[in-house]
Length: 168
Image (cartoon, rainbow, N blue to C red; front, side):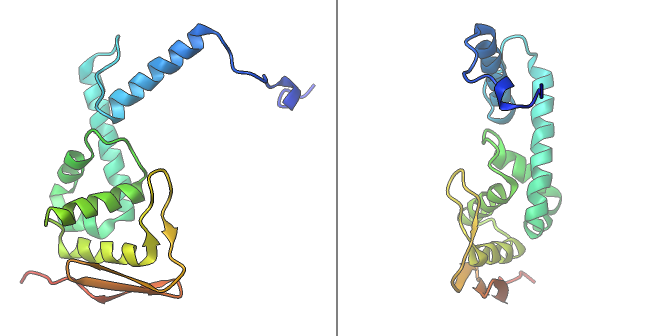
């Protein structure tokens, strides 16, 4: 008998109360780690805070891989800016988080020219994703404009026509 055959897979979910309690406890732990929920019973707050900080650093590194110009433009403040922005927000994927952070910084008039160039290129090449969906490439010619930077997309290629103004 093959242990992976469909006949060995249960057809319904278990009604065992320990399974649902375990799932609830795991959900509470994940919420405490990524969404700033209160620590679940039985967990010390200090190790949870250290783990939360480590997860935020990991997320910042993942976002910096998708948004290198944004991360570079913030220099040594990148981690601090990202952690301040991401605290209490559940993870949404590195590309989307970088996009939302860039839009947030642009709205607060704190987006650097390099970040504006990068955001304009992403806006020209992709549709801003709806919650829970990945960004979709644009099929028709399009453009993006952020903080003086202008980018166009034609035939799947994005070109930066005019970079944002740099401060001398």
